Amino acid sequence: MSIHYSSYSEIKSGLQNGEITAETLVQGYLQQITTHTRLNVFNEVFDQEATAAAKAVDAKIKAGTAGKLAGMVIAIKDNICYKDHKVTASSKILENFTSIYSSTIVERLLAEDAIIIGRCNCDEFAMGAANENSYFGAVKNFADETRVSGGSSGGSAVAVQARMCHAAIGTDTGGSVRQPAAFCGVVGLKPTYGRISRYGIISYASSFDQVGTLTHSVEDAALLLQVMAGADEFDSTLSHQPVPEFTVDGKQPSKKKIAYLQKALSSPGVDAEVKSGLVEAIEKLRADGHEVKPISFDYLDYLVPTYYILAMAEASSNLARYDGVHYGYRSPNATDLESTYKLSRSEGFGKEVKRRIMLGTFVLSAGYYDAYYAKAQKVRRLIRNKTNELLEEFDFILTPTAPEPAFSIGKEEKDPVVTYLYDIFTVQASLAGLPAISLPVGNNSKGLPLGLQLLSKAFSETELLNFSEYFLKL
Image 1 (cartoon, rainbow, N blue to C red):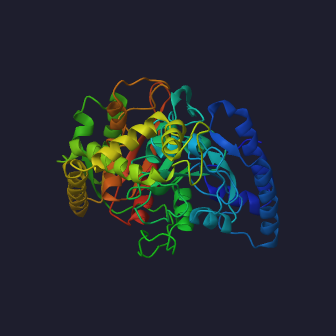
Image 2 (cartoon, one colour):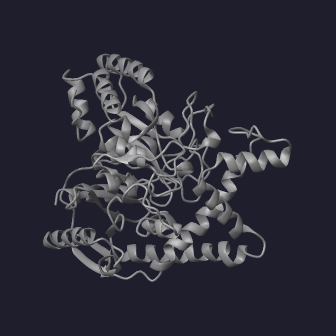
Image 3 (cartoon, one colour):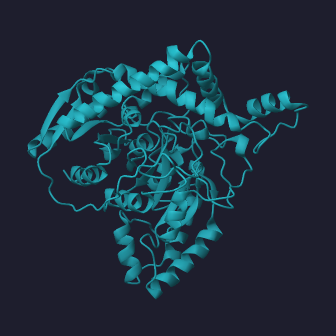
């Protein structure tokens, strides 16, 4: 069965008029997963369970009791807890860990009759920009198997790109939904921090982590956001802002004021075809009557350092719980408490995770706290204030999602800072806690997908989604 649906509304129509069933959909996606196993997308496929769930959904559709997502086949990133299922965050330290409860978002998806087909590979503990830091190996890009998928939600992005599911859920800390979305030619939405509950999401950096969606359409991103957003007594960081109807109306928007980063066009570090894609988008927007202006951002050079100091500090704190005592991997070579800690953590964590824990511990240590962590918090406030100030004048900020298309798997960088700089355009929204979306804008001359990012005011997802729908049709 060929899986070709670009939006859930097409699937829903087919289910209602009897052209397809949820069960045949699941079988079609399972066939795609089998055909493309070499892409290394899934850490586990729930084949029998998904088939049984599809049969139950088909019965609900016939009875007229089906939920909003009936027949939508979804994959979840392997750092999202699902009761009685393994969850590893793609790390050896959690290799055989089974969750004893479900995350709030999983419960909400299942309550609306979504079908979860499996858990997707990701960078270990969501730390990476290429999905090469996984204990289970790299995820390959469906557009070119020699290229990375992007990270850390690379498995989720390729699952949608290769039509192994209809939509996928990822997490975005500094760009981990948006950057793989750009590399894989799909829509990647990071909502406002606090819009979706983080309960049951394995933490990386708690003041940044946010659940996001990977879809073929803006319409589906809006629908999934609608289902997952809203109050949750288990997450004290969740906003009490009311949740509006996230519907995409398809209407011509009023004339907008849009800013774009001048440095994105002048920097030698940005790929020429990425620049030309941005220029083309600017020209189309201007031709349609929008005001599009170049801006400079005073703190651009501080975005990546500030993000990584704070994220690594939070990672150091969050990952202290994986000690070989409470749960997860315990070294068989341990002989006492100290060796249990040392050996379990050194054997259980991968190279990049250990690097970030050590850097995080360093910036939090006595004598360095004020010089690094406290200063980075102050700079974060400056970045947030400046970004909000710009968004008082402009409706959206337009940038490339990533400085270049998907790079080759195994591209060795002697300096990890070079890899961290791939986050240059995505971390601004993360530091400021704002909603941002990566939109596919075609392929480059080598057939590799390219993406552009729109960033907007806090809790303005309705405006962002509607403008994104219009932007894709320009």
